[in-house]
Amino acid sequence: MQVDGKVALITGAGNGIGAALAHRFATEGAAGLLLADLDGDAVQRVADGIAAGSPGTRVLARQVDVADRSQIERMVATATDELGPIDLLCSNAGIGTGLGLDADEDAWARSWDINVLAHVHAARAVIPGMVERGGGYVLATCSAAGLLSMVGDAPYSVTKHAAVAFAEWLAITYGPQGIRVSALCPQGVNTNLLNEGLGEGALATRIVRSAAEVIEPEQVAESVVVGLADERFLILPHADVHDHLRRKADDPDRWIGALQRFAAAVEGAG
Image (tube, rainbow, N blue to C red; front, side, top):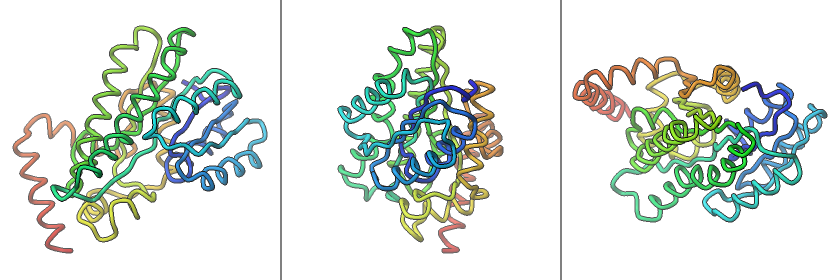
C-alpha cells in the first residue's frame, strides 16, 4: 500500500511510534488522519502540528480509551463520517507493566484489554467495510516481544504474543478478500513505553536497552512506510529480530538457555 491519498486511523498517536506514523503519513500525502490517544491534549498537539505543516492532509484528534469497545466503535464511525472510508487501520496503542508473577489481576486485565482486545475491537469495526469495498490494510503494533519474549514483563510478553497471533489470523482469514495485514515488531524504541511504562531501572527496561540499539520512532515510521509498500506481514525495524526468530525456531532449548544467561548477566550488572 502507498499511503498517498489514503485515509488512516492511528491509535496511541499522542507520542512515540503513533505520532511518528502520523507525521510520516502526512508527509507521504495521506488524504486524512484520525489520531486517537488516551491523552487528549497530547494527541491534539500532534494533530495541530500536522495541520500546520501538511495542509493537504485533513487531520482529526480524539481522546479514546482503546480498552473500551464502545469508544473504539465511535472513533471508527467518526473517522468514516468525517474523513471517508478507512483505508489503513494502525492499531498501535499498547502498555507495559515491568511485572512478573507479582502482576495482579488488574495489571493482566488492563494489558489484555489494550494489547490484545483493542486490536480485536478495531478490526471488528473496520474490516466489514474494507471487505465490502474490496480492500484495506491493518497494521498492528505487536513488538518483537510477541515473536521472542520480554524478560521482566510477563503480561507484556504474553499479550504481545497474542497480538501477533491475532494479526496472523486476520491475514490468513481476510487476505483472500483483499485485506492486507502487517505486524510491526520493533525491539527498543525511544518512547514513553520504554522510558516510563516499564519502570525506570526495572529489569525489563535494562534488558531492552542491553539487547539491541534503541532507535527513534521516526526510524520505525520509515520501516513501516517501506513495509506497507511491500505488503510484508512482518515489519522488523531491527533487522536482527529475523535472525533471532530463526534461531529460536531452530533450537528452542538453546534459545531459552541463551536468554536465561543474558537476563542473569543484565540483572547482575544492575
